[in-house]
Length: 216
Ligand code: SAM
Image (tube, protein in one colour):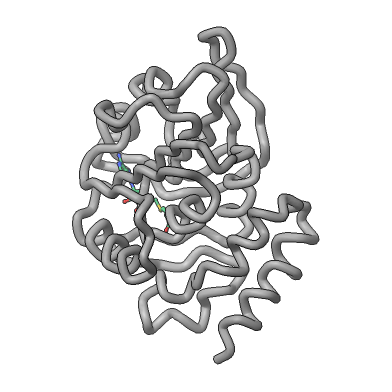
């Protein structure tokens, strides 16, 4: 399978026609080898227009949703970004192409270890991974310019709003456990402003400031 051709097709047929315009974002999607983040037996679906299972009942999101969340954050090369929900490590790799530093937290050790191995193999030196409850944030590394939560949350975890810089942006799927609204939050003069982006469906954010374990 020629993965480079599949990546170009993904960019041209899934991302650009749906309005992803940022050239740096599109180039990151052309560069990062998404198939390497996907279990070998499912690699033929790596560039398909849907989420793919990655183990532990979790998924790597559909390429378009990863691109949309990335573009909405309006990232720049000096940003320090916190990701909640490392999963496969793919979103972290995309972020690492675009910003100075990425901090990413995953609740399943198995997934975090696998993601870390792949990210090391690619030689990323600007990504730090830890295992734990991401709803608590990463206090020692805070504050962050941007925060991305890649699991569905019933609300905005308070520690994350505190760890977001003034004029910072946070994006998350907000709502019920089975359907949410992708929401962009901006911190302006200490207050949070909300913008609805689109409907979406994510696996639940499970933790102290997310859903309880019975949704996992
Ligand atoms: N960003 C990932 C990627 O690129 O593959 C996809 C993330 S997947 C849709 C959501 C991830 O969030 C899962 O791996 C899940 O285990 C993780 N998760 C859920 N609740 C969490 C929490 N409280 N802290 C950290 N990770 C969490």
